[in-house]
Image (cartoon, rainbow, N blue to C red; front, side, top):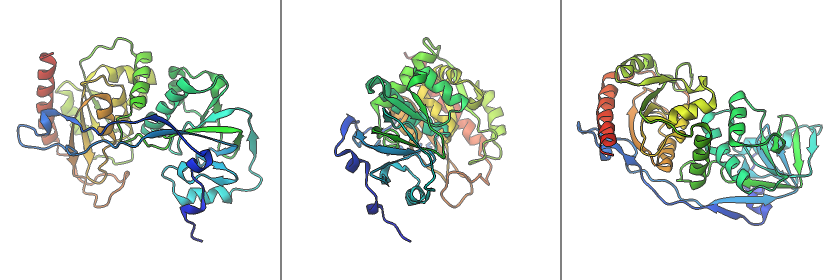
Length: 360
């Protein structure tokens, strides 16, 4: 049976209004060499600009939260614009759940804290971190922040941010949670992914301050994808070896405690890596850091350029031909990396960056 979105209410309808959190300007990137290397190579995305949607908060209730779907319901119906990227199937699964599904009753105001892809590091950094920062600044004393069962690194994040245990409500798939009132912010559904969000910038700065009060600049970091299955590059190790001869440190961020990750990237003068969740660590870089992103040809996505614009970082991106003919975010490359070309570009970018540092 075909179901349309119009069959389900939206969060604005449930709230009957909304409160403005922030607006942001339309901004372009700050590109190394003005976007063109001395050999004539052009960076990707030089004509891209951030989006400018107003960012809102919504308050509604009574409401029910389903952590398995990461969506909210009001008056017995799921709110169609809280499903993020899951589509209509998630709304249908809400109604298909067994009537025996337990519902845990709470008597406090709950704030939305995560999306359905919360174990993805980028989604956590881009969505949960600013939502949590806003909660800590604006929530009532007895309000709670909704969280999934926390992984060790997520536990480190919320502790570093200063979220007290009594303000955390850990939710579990298979149980639904009822509240007299819910506060939902646009951060959770990715509305700031392509904006120059001041709230996100402040959230990242607060965590950087908590983890690394006086970082020393000067590190060159190469983020390895390593065993990551999505968008695997067949000869990444060859590139990594070549970059170490230029002074780069090979980094597997997922192997480090969160505070150490943040501190490491706060020390960076240049960060290089493939499009992927680990590159969200550029959120911890200080203004002026140069980010060199290698973007697979079958998944062109400006989310990390947006993060660089937001943080006042400098940027360069090369498209890496992968041999994959269709657009997706997981297929491994069938073509090897052009290691020599990437190394030459890296040398030029390093020379440019060192010249900037020397002119301070």
